[in-house]
Image (cartoon, rainbow, N blue to C red; front, side, top):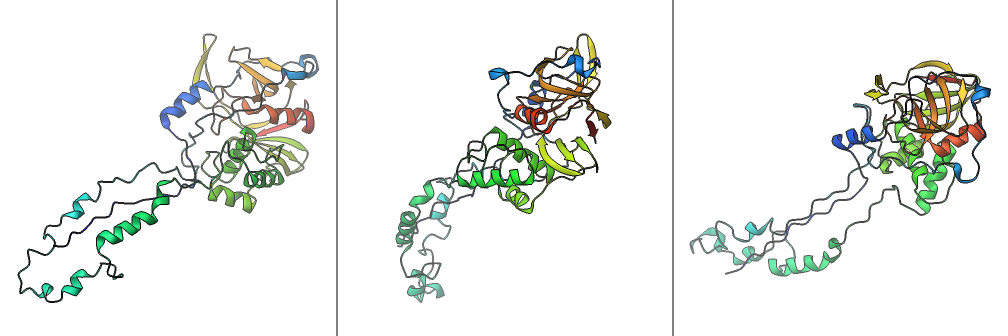
Length: 352
């Protein structure tokens, strides 16, 4: 009697991306990431309200995005990368194959047609060299020694480093995304730029660079300006981006986070976390860390453009709306707006 040996089930999935998403996590993040903006900031003269620029170590640390940048406006995102697989092969999955209902042929009558040619019964199912199933399984197990080691992911994400990261940073910088250093280290600044690229391309906003996001960078995906003349700070609410525009040309694309649309309580009153759309201008700027008059927290070097709503730096700029109404950008991006690009009082701000 010939014993048939069952092969253990095998499986290997290639990791091509990582998604970080969760409705409950998004709700918790939204509550914890609210910005320091208020609705009742009194307009004052720009010159009298500005204060000296901070020196030395007074500037906050560069932006550190939310740990779970997964919640998005429904219907606007397309998957760009895949969540690494977590299923392990189950050793006992094919255990039942070792005992078939008909046994190993002993149930056939001696005169059965299947027994007339014993050589046919000895042939492996794949028409191979005539090795029995035990030998074949043993060979496969020897060949599969490397399968036990997880396959290295080919995507890039926060914490990655190397030449590929440097190439990505250079490409993003060439396209105008806010990247100040091409150092081969995938830090928070690079993640912010990847968020912006994914938003501009209508991709899933997870900050992970897989094939789809790399393709968007290769194709040169960049948002178009809505204005055609002068220096304008454009704020795209739908895509959560801030654009520095000069005469219709986008010179910088910056990841942003605006009002999340929820209601909140402050000093006994109820407000809605709403960022108004329309044409405005910078009317007040504070060149230091500024505390909200509604006691909602601090904002770095804000430039107010309507009421208590400002563009300001923040240590937390997720890929989704999370503020009380202001428009958050990273601290380093806000420093660039102040120190390099300008945007003084009177600079047009167009929100759409």
